[in-house]
Image (cartoon, rainbow, N blue to C red; front, side, top):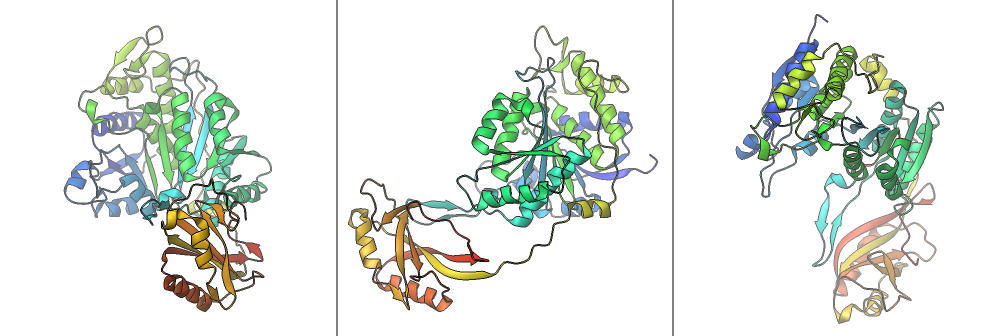
Length: 488
């Protein structure tokens, strides 16, 4: 490899500089054909008054190199500081988080020595869109946004990852027994895309039992694809059961740029003590080398790293009497890996990464979204959310008043509180907050106009009610695009 690939590097905060130095020294000795371009991120940038934690001109480096090897950072306490990871993922469109979770027993303690799974998590939407509102004294709202393109992108990526890496099965995890529209969309797209990969086994798990199975029988999983919040939770569960969160590397993949990092934090309490384990960042760097077309170098490093574990050369976080032979610091561990370059592990499975090299055009074609015909969208109703806590929060009181609203046939049909129907025919035992959803339809649920919507709000206001939010109710090709209330 005569031509070096330029990458962007950030040394980060806390233990970041130490583990980055160790990692880069291993990459250099292993023959990685890379050239680093260093940017500043993290605490010192935050303290300059830059709320994103990254210098504005650093984006130019990331757009230029398209590859980011990042150490963990420290976010100062207090308000006004944005998550750098979230900012980077969203700004650069890093839609796929890839988290391998593999056991290295008996050299790293685990009850599940056969575990070898990869969790692929949607990275841009879901509750992590961060759209929240306080609507009343008592009620706060966080919007969960799931899109068809976002779902298809991550699901298609998961199947392509499985195909490229000779993985046998892809499992989808959702909570679509409760969130039938949002999570239901993700599951439905999974089934659609799966038909294009008949050689790959598929299954689906509800996220609660799926998480329990990861914690109890992780060897049953191969590749898991899921939504943002669920993926965040189960990837840490999976990393922990394999032995140590400190060993895990992570990739964040976009159509143009990719970011590679350790999954752990900056650990400022041990910064500068030369005791941190660089393995998480090193494993992230191994994923980077595969991504940039240097899988042979990645295998050389990964095999030397596993040989080091087998030889009992361990940092303090995984050191165990009877298994470990020598406790070492950050740099000494790196030197031990370098000494073993060219060796393969004797007990652990030898590294074997995907060798197929695709052009950018081939990759785009493989991950291209299917064209979907837009549905016929018809407005048929309206939900009006009201802040009201008078008259002992008696649902009959608010309901009987709102029955007077009539916008050319658009009338109130029911009221719910926290999703439960409370009017008409509610139960006196139901606890009610100060946040009420009032649903309006024509009697035959036919199309309504925006003028009728405006008239409803005018009449609600005239009756003295404070409406804090509205939500239009549509059908799409004749199917309801909204959930029914409990008891509706």
